[in-house]
Length: 285
Image (cartoon, rainbow, N blue to C red; front, side):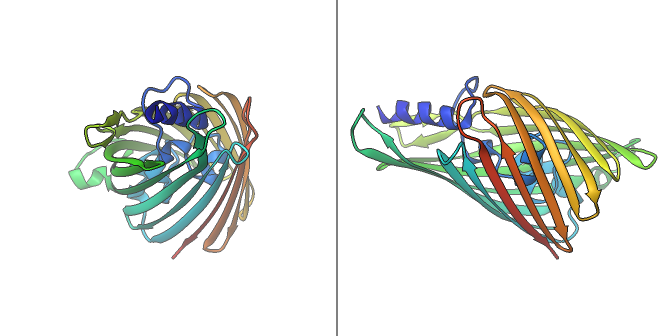
């Protein structure tokens, strides 16, 4: 009974009615910056966010960055805490998904549910392999670990995510594309009692980048379109729309740069539940 309750619950909170298998904390995309683009971020991902959207984006790292985010999912139905850091092309992070309790039977006691995820990744430049191409090509890989706990029952598992990213100069602008294959693995298991498959996913996107305007279109469980406009060197406003398994969702966000400190906020609507709020803070050195 608990297995089916867990499966039903994670599908509901993820809003992924078309998905097959288990939702993990990374599927809730705990990034305030990317959320402002409605999750259209596969070709723009960099820093710790690349661990979620495309590990190839880690190859552009050249310093130290620490990042954190908090997600109040669908009006408090669940929450996610995300902490991570990068050192050059290397990155690591962990995410904790908490959902309070789930009723085992109608009117019965709640079963505590949580998931703890950890991920490490690395990005590589195509120049390292001597590739002579008319664009900058990058590669990346990330290994994810997830541990799910429902009452006194728990399980864990590993998965692999692979990414590819390319950049083509167009004068003062750039055309970027990204491709990522997520959660390749055997899923979560708890001995011989039960096993849940990962929700293997594909992200693909293209972005047009100028010093003032950034726009991207992605496919990730549906169509996502996002854009950001630099009002000033310190302030970017963002917006987008996602047409996924959860229905049509609208996003709006803002990013503030204060020297080496970045503050990001985003709000995403939902057709049924309350909006999701995301708040992020990062610092680079």
